[in-house]
Image (cartoon, rainbow, N blue to C red):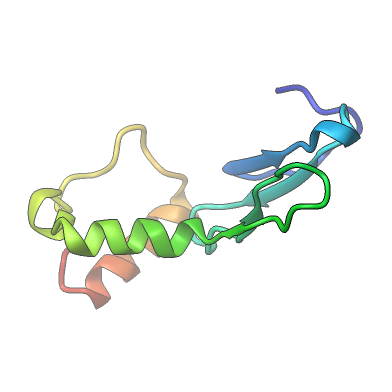
Length: 99
């Protein structure tokens, strides 16, 4: 999605747009080594917006369904990561005895 005047470089982005503020939106940008930032889900005006902690949800799904037993972490990801991200991933997987 094109964004005017945005020079933020990031691997991932979450864009939250409230109906009463269109075309303006809140941008939550993050990179692979970062924790996914919690973000609000817009509801009707006057309703309390729940905050979604997507990082915690993904971690819980990973743990509950045993993805560490299914994913072959000895393989390099496709597409390939940048050199700095590869170093980060190797260190993280090494700490967890997955590589």
